Amino acid sequence: MSPAPEATLLAFDFGMRRIGVAIGNTLVRVAHPLTTIESEVSERRFAAIAALIGEWRPDRLVVGIPVHADGTEHAMTQRARRFASQLAGRFALPVVEVDERHTTQDAQVRLARAGEGGRRGRARRDEVAAQLILQGYLDEQPQG
Image 1 (cartoon, rainbow, N blue to C red):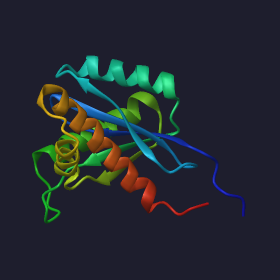
Image 2: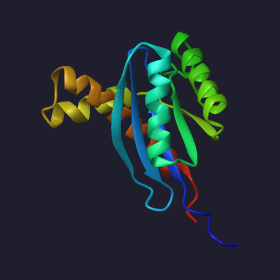
Image 3: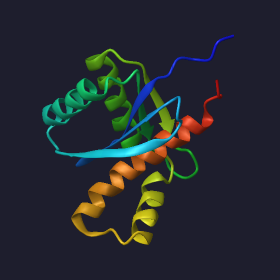
Image 4: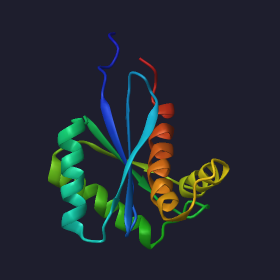
């Protein structure tokens, strides 16, 4: 059996004000923070995502789905699922939903240790959270 082909992935940490974005691929299996989309206007968000998809040509999208620590869903769970569904519909790419429990807090701790804070630190937190979401996904995939 031949190994799976290399695939580029974009991951999203969905929020109502900001969406963190990370990039990685299945060959190197390392995720990197990419950018943060800062807008509450849906069309602006999707225009920015369309530009990223055009630039990076991902084979698959990964969306973090927030749940409570005990795994139960809350209001943002459904919003993130709707966002994942909209991505699939608009861009005709496979979308994978993954558990994103604690990624924002983990990202915040990492950035605090690095001395990053303030407004840019909050935006950076979201793209680092997306990186953690994607890295977790890559780590769970079988190696080819």
